[in-house]
Length: 391
Image (cartoon, rainbow, N blue to C red):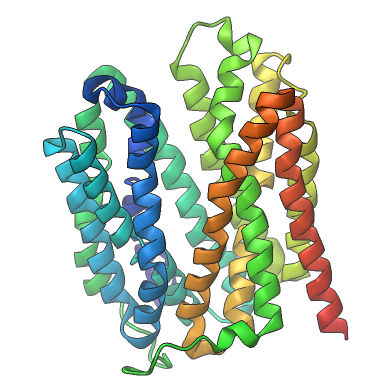
């Protein structure tokens, strides 16, 4: 038990320090745009470069975690995430160099997140795997939110380069404890040299889980992309004249996603994965459907609702990924999780655009329900999974 906890703690810390890099550019984006004279399109490309690198490498990273030691994949991935980000902070001077360095950070980030899930699932049996992966995946939300808060604060006090630097350096210290304080599980079933295997695509339970995860991401990343703009436009926040306050609230909302992941994982160990996923999606769909109508509320009321939103919108994430580890062959868990991540992240490109189109036509009251549609489609996938298991 003690060794399991150490594995979880070290692996979660590796994810935390690595994921600080993911959103540090977003936190300082206005300052980078001003200094480099970027257009909106160029600024978006620099952000998208990280996502592109991650998507390019995610499936190979999952395969490597199946075939070889996930510890080494994580150690290399974390180091490779931090180095280009530090170079971005110190030497990037414009669009081209910034894009290349962010792409490289995203490329190596793929070696941390999914291989970490594979590693944790090796050590925790199904009876407690939900809470373990809930803690691990929750670290992603906590790191993402705190990256936004830390980087915004440091950039406001000093400058954006130091902000990016201090949120990048931690990734360089991941490899030593990862390699020295953990080991591969004694009964690990990885088989070195085995060919890449896509047999998971014939597993209907797995495909429904991927569908659930994809629609979860549709809603989650749509909210995270547009929430700041919504709060800035809300009369109560606009009246304060503070640019930091809305960003702080968004950061806390993302941090609360960690609570949602832990709660969802813990609950799924007790009442089952599909039921917990259904509860989370139903709660987030309800909030997304009406959130665009709440702009006239006070700061205190909006703050409270946003925090609840942050918990509800992540409750289904850990149970879904845990379910993936349980419905596929143990030796293909890394491949299955990486394919899930690849497919799931494609919806994150589309949903913010659909939201924007609805916003242009009819305002936030019509835009937020487009995110609720994603959660409802996820619920349909849960229903199909339950019917498959009963049949």
